[in-house]
Length: 378
Image 1 (tube, rainbow, N blue to C red):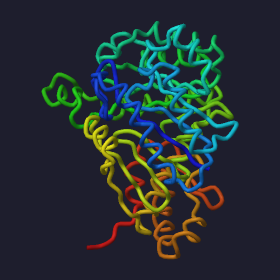
Image 2 (cartoon, rainbow, N blue to C red; image 1 turned 120 degrees about the vertical axis):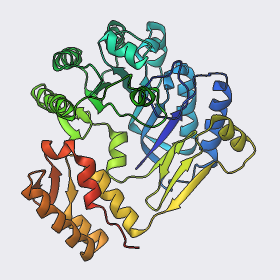
Image 3 (cartoon, rainbow, N blue to C red; image 1 turned 90 degrees about the horizontal axis):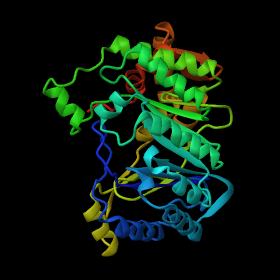
């Protein structure tokens, strides 16, 4: 069972924190749609198994495409793959795109899950981030989507934003819970290279939030989400029972996926592959049947490090017996040594054969995962 991801590289406006590949010019929308379908045909054999349990439209802002255009991509997928009857089909959308007319048309498609980029309900935060919607527009968009029958909705929220007090953070989350959504993705604001936020930070126009304050916001999120019946199943993701993101879970469970579109990544258990992150070059290469991607063959240690990275992000944790059977005694003993270290520091807990990050460990997860990686000596 596999998944297909479409990267839709268009946005109507540039968010100041975003480092994903995108363009605010929509002139190439029709050409891109054609080339996404062409790439799908070119790479229909990449996954081997042609049965799909998930399709995900990410970006960028996929909701720049009309509902019938999204459905045309799903129909194209169905030409080359078997889409399982209960497949999860997700569309990322901006709140201001979810008009009554758009939702009416979208409800006729096979899209059955929405991931809505709200980020904040406070207008001052939205202005700072250069979002196109207001807090009220975001709240109303979710209510409209529910009225049109969408009952599997995820919302994005960002914490650690300069000026975000605990009081405002609590207010934001209370509004999320009032909406009765099924899934929350919440990320700490990152100052990624080449973003407007990073440039402002370097000029002293923004001040990064103190780590202790960020940690307090994260811990509050974990506690209040649990009280509202959400499972903290991955570092940045919370869901009601039965509403875990199946597509994203395929990344964390080491399942195969095919990425379509500029900058999209693919993985078939043996190789990682990534497409060129340039719209014009991608379209030109696809039309001329030229190379549009790079690939990397994975060594045993690469696969082990991928396993560490993905499994430790989740509440399923890393199965030590699976390490022993799949990667051998040397890497198993390496993990045992690291496990003792983090059990002592109370960053992880052990349940039967699996080690799982606790709340303290989740906040410094990158450091812990890096320490578990196997690095070959020069």
